[in-house]
Image (cartoon, rainbow, N blue to C red; front, side):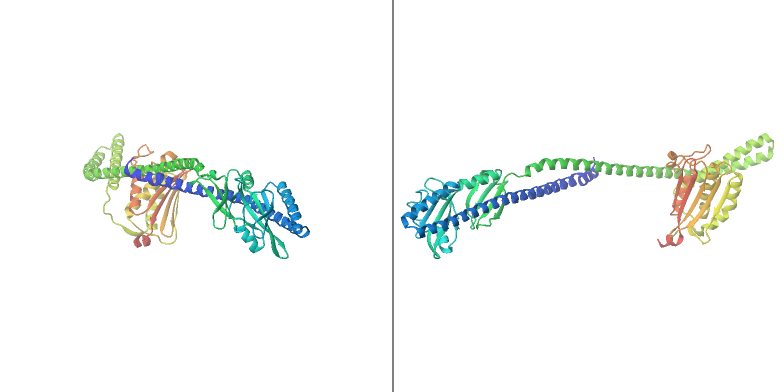
Length: 505
């Protein structure tokens, strides 16, 4: 592989493959992240609804309990009321496992009664949630986890007990943190869940070991009932699964690009082969021209002498048997002279006299010769010319030679009672000459060789006639093409530029 091929290989295979693999990886990564976000939103919705419902149920229960306690405090004396309240608190705490303890405090924050004695030696007056409940006269939730003397982590909820629009007492319940965690862990065991307050300080978390530092996918969602944020995270990333998919895609792309590279290389080799073939043909023609230029005159001069002597001998020996020999000799001398003339045309282009003529005039001049040739072969011949003038810039003699050669080929290829048509059409920039016959046609495998030097299907042909015609037409800036189907005739199409367009260029 040379330097040029390596460059093509890099720009067709290596560079596009790298870009495609990178693009595929980013596409799959974005899609995986989007799917992960959707999963996190789904998990967040579950826990947010569950947490909001849990807090709402707890607050409703505390409000109902506060109303009950308020009625008990109004109807009984303090001792009986305290005993009645304690029974009510224990009864409620026993029915719901979420409670770690329920307590009734006085206005100063000291314990009056409760389901246990864990707060007996404590005054909760300065707790933020107690102050919020006294200030707002509404249920307040703690922003941090409290650990009781029995090592039980809880979250406190305070509800004021009102009497005549004044806070008579404070109802405090401890929500067991392990109970809340178990619910969350049961709902989504593969995700890490954290609860943080409005200051983004973590309150508690569940499955925190599942979240890794580097691969953590996290999303934050606010709760409706509390000024808390629900943080959902997981290390169940799909990034690792992208590598096999990307590798498979890269392998497929690499194979396709290799196929494309091979196709491009094939086209380039085909073009190079065609170019080299054209160069070889040009070299052949140049060699023929060089040989013809050096030997044409040396061949023609003795031929002229030989032809003259043969004519003298023909006049001297007029025996019928000798006449046959002289005819053959004269025919072969003419054939040699024709071959030499074709060699000269095939050689290097020489200065030729170009004229601007009406192409119809050439056909008018040649029409008697072509028609007599058609009569000789018993062929029907028809010429169709347009009424308007068609001016082209050509060499008249060479153009006549082309037309005579092509019509003669058609006559020689025809069977008797065949037909040859010559039609001239005028286009916008070119004129078109079509010479068609209904002869046997040309085999498909021979069509690509008909303009090759020395290729002929005739027994006595030189294989230079069509090459000479092509050379002449191309020297006029035109083209010549042959269409044929074996058994259905042949059409020769010649295109010549009109004089006005040629001069403008």
